[in-house]
Length: 356
Image 1 (cartoon, rainbow, N blue to C red):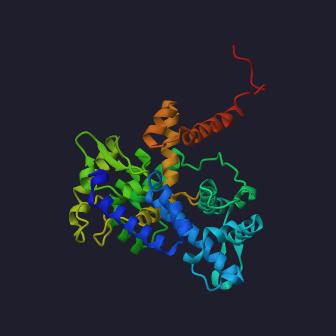
Image 2 (image 1 turned 90 degrees about the vertical axis):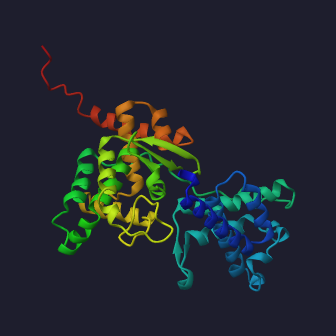
Image 3 (image 1 turned 180 degrees about the horizontal axis):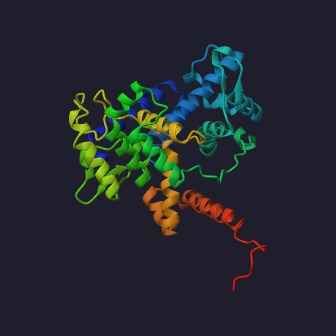
């Protein structure tokens, strides 16, 4: 149950296996840095760091003629200590746009900043431990990111439109699409009702087992992004949607071996994956709200904004959404304030007669 379920044990094991495999490809200078972060950083994050560092060392191999015979493992602290800020800037430009047909890619500022973060950390680690004399990253500016205060979320009308599309289908669906949707209608209603009514992340939904749901007291036990366990309460609409799915469609599923405990299944009897849930949300959102790019995270934003509107309690919103830093939650406050400003546009009209 929760973080002690077989799903999360297997997930953690697979992440560790992936991390250990990547570390075998990295040079000792990068491995030392990754080891220094293991006690304070999630394994999934370290996997991302390792991929990003491998990208950097592979870039050095291809861009520097003297390194063509190197493997990523061959790079030493002595070698990276001789890198200049311009070398790092050139790597940033490579991340931004590479027109090479065999390795074409184009990254935005946010992605570049994310990929530069472990590189910056590695140089700082070795500089602080006196393994390199200079830290070229000090003179390398990161891409300047603009904080987007505009949270994309759904109005009440748009929420009803999406739920109506799930429950009843639409004229845009072909007969085949309607027939397929009918087989999973109660599951889809349960997933969307749950996500819209609790604000859980798509990964938290994906990890739910049947025994994580208590329909007696209306709670779900989830595992947060950081690995911590949490219990959330839900209302009658969610209770009815989940109970209806469990008592009908779920009973008809023949789960594949090892996935018998999952709450939400595909028609193939496999646990609904993160990608499958994302595609489910996008499919119905494109039908009902074609003017907005709606993802599972937008459902989370919709719930967070609605909860703040109803309660005015920013700390409650942070707690329910599982935000470790309340500054993340303040964006929902900003969204409500923006609504108030729009209301102010029509609040004053000097052409109206004075009240008697």
